[in-house]
Image (cartoon, rainbow, N blue to C red):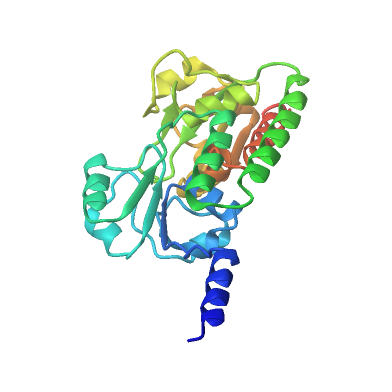
Length: 279
């Protein structure tokens, strides 16, 4: 090869942009999956977990089970080059085993339910994926939340809200402190009637339900379907004895949209805030 050919080849290699190879992504957790797609990296996702239901494209991919009960064999079998998981994904030893198998595992470290954490997660995931629109997406989300927060601050009153989770249809549970439901009710300027009584979710009892006397009951659309529809839901023991049950003030929203703490949070909280104030 002539000398000038060599020089030209070196010059081209030095000035040409480096094209990063696409990852084979496995996303664990609905919020992670939604952020990855919002960052324009959905084409690199090869599989996800059963909580990953948005956007629609995510539903069509192979599932590796539930995010909190993963198996090392199931994760490794996807042949992913990178796994991005929510803070609550696990068990932890399973993710450690996968790391030991040579797969890069990125797990979010903060599982707090705050609008600020959503922005932080966008930036963390975007950085890992070298997404060019990371800061744009994070800034757009922050502006949308600020706009929603200003409008929420002008709302009147603090409706007494009870959140009931029954997606499996095997028994209703109500949300106390340190739950996504409690956080989203507060953001919507409502009062969780179970706040301050316990942490997490507990089985619904008639006594507690009647004593709580909620003005409105919020549940998930999936939970309402699992209960057999609104009329069957209203037959849940104790509900008809509450102000919410007597007035038929039952609100149902998509689980991921309402509780996922995703980039759609401003819209979800605003929708909930108005719904719990309707007579």
